[in-house]
Length: 524
Image (cartoon, rainbow, N blue to C red; front, side):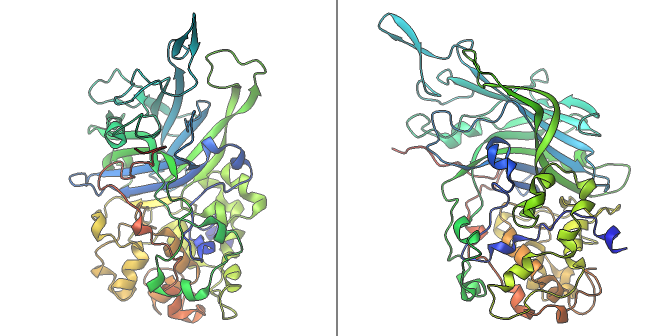
């Protein structure tokens, strides 16, 4: 019975290692192989009911790739991998299998029919070495030396054998190719990057949907805050900081000024649901895949954007649903295996959930011995993060697995009214689970994930037993009979734990694509 219940991937709740004067990154360089392939490294996945005014009937999906982008990363900057397949998967049944998949493919084309822009030097015409030959202001600007384009395909059913149809431009259904804005080279090249990037937000026809959606792919400022050095130095932080709510924003952000590449979609809710099963809850995750065969051309041809020749079947090398899972929960020996796995096969990682190591690691930095919760197996964590919470974000068919789960029927809340601690914060704010009907914001993590949700603090509270404290003595939230206050050595202190960086301080837009303009390579 226990093994069947816990056939799950490791806890998204495991932001535990963030207990420092820092915040935790969701998934940056989290597995041995992915460090060798940064273009397919997924850093964060967001899925939330759109809170832009007038867009309450939509769900926003954002998959961020290529973390740690420096603004001065020229001359090539951070183009996406044309030999990779980037995907966002949706389970609207509850069997931990994809039933809708949005596939992104990229193409990088040199100007001048592959010769690149050239300048006359004496009597010769010579190719320039930069991404641009002058100021850039418009979509497909003639001054760009490389055109970055992409396609989006919706696959219904299995990601490889299902029915595939292209996403098209709403104003012209014959157009299936979209332009990605060049990265923020600097103010001299792109005087108004925000305005330039906004030209690349497209209204699109999504196959099977009567209402158009939106798509944007481009560089954005990384919305996460983190002090990676402290975290991976055995959580080098004073307990007096992480238990003092007044010091919630006293840490250092290692990601300040760094960017990511966002794959953002806004899709009508009705298009993500299966009308035959009555589910209002969906599950989602993102993956990236490379071809199994990859050969290097020892003599690359002029005009080619890569020396690699790829072939064979797709091999998944990156996976991200709930934040923090592979980075700080999965054992080192299994990190690459997790990145290649699917939610339906998460039984292989059951031990990481039934007996999580992170609470024990935290004991080393807390003054009291025995700080880890004792309610083994941790059914509270399984319910909150791997099956969904009943009446909140649990699919009618329950399959324990690692993916974000979002109830599309729960109304979005404007950013200024969002509880940064999501559902956990609302439980605490209203005085316990018994008062949950009084909650005004149940639209946050782990019910999906918004950019403003402080998933580190939420997960830290949950890992150290805070859900048991909030739940009380009667199991109103179905976290398991053993999830009682007596099983939490930290008691009420578990609800006060934080990582000393306030996620709510990160700047965000109030409209699609929500993540803000990336830092410029140089400023005037």
